[in-house]
Image: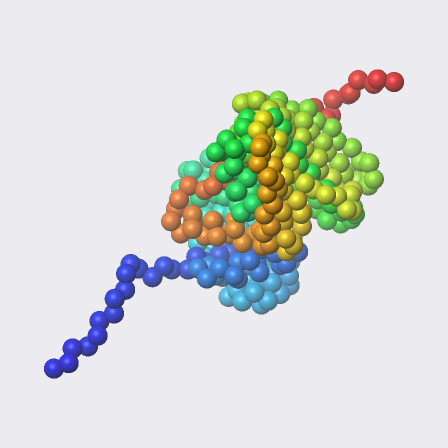
Length: 342
């Protein structure tokens, strides 16, 4: 008698993470959902938008089974995690409701309109035992991780300063970012928040800030320019420049240490082009590394793994809370009357 061959399967076959998405803006359509489709262990199940036709179109385009224009009904759907990409003013209610519905959450930055809302969100997610991650996608990029590795290994020595710019040309219009009631603020909250997250990732907590904001080119309800000097708890400083009013900015990250420096070019605010990491260490030849990849795929891979395993997120609700406190401090300092020198 010939015995039948037995299948040798090691471990269980991993299930797919089922996603719902809330908010159907251009970033969702052009960046987030194409990246989600590239993940073999994730699947889009449901789409929510206050605009029912928009929800229907996005669902059809990306193969979602369901679409909805009622958020409460949307949360009753059979999915594990929700990506919240609605206007900033909606994050507070939508994140808390998602937590109460038992959904893991990937939320767009900033987490809310103010730090009091951010604290409520932290408590709601903890109480309902759900994982909350914030979409600070730059932190997950291989070049950022390489820079962090060099810093942690003390190859550039004690950090003296970090400077970073995130400057784009964004003409005021009907976009929610230019309505303070919906966004909470302008260039600082939309772009500068990413830089603050990177500063803390590279060199720890920030204890003091000095801020400026202005409308240099475009006049609207929110600033088109924000600038800040930040002091690290462990020593050294960071310089932030964010704006909606520059067409061809370099947007370079520079990290200067006692024994060397690191720079990252063609990275911030740009998609699908080759980024460059430059390393200049004392008594060594300069080194250059190039890497081309979409940034969003890395944060989605991290979120997928964390949500499936219920691990602690790489970017915690506390990180989002601290980021908001820093932005509020910058805005508060910028609102004070400066001393005229002439």
